[in-house]
Image (tube, rainbow, N blue to C red; front, side, top):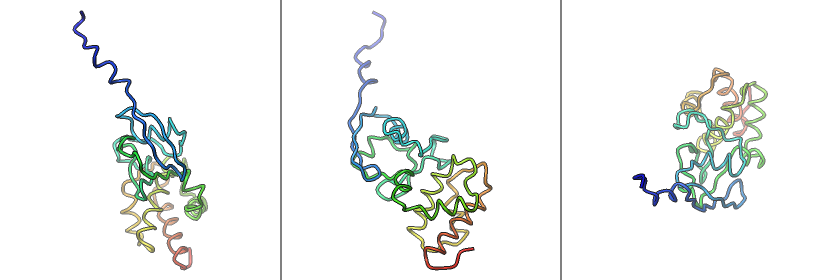
Length: 173
């Protein structure tokens, strides 16, 4: 007898069946109880547009919409999202919801390496759904949870501001 409690061995291999509506499609998958939602999306559902960055909820690379709100999918266990409606960058892009944001990010070169871009777009879409014409300061504040090493943020802020103006019927710059 090694002193090793073999009754605990099975617990590490246990999985739970979870069901979501992801990008408008009903899906089910088996996950470990402590598997994060970002890992489930990337590894089980092959939705790799959602990035795992800091895994502490500080960088914003893992942002998705969960029941219509932007959340850090690295901080949520997949089992916690059972039954939820999830929209990833792929779903928002395919539906055309963020087409104007994507075009403006591209036009203003606000995406450079692209690692942070999905989270920035998810965050920007939520902001514009809550505040039709945010000020540049409100945009900066909303982006404070998104980390980017490439752009210096000004092009991103300019892009979001231009889309806000265009969506509200204003003139873009």
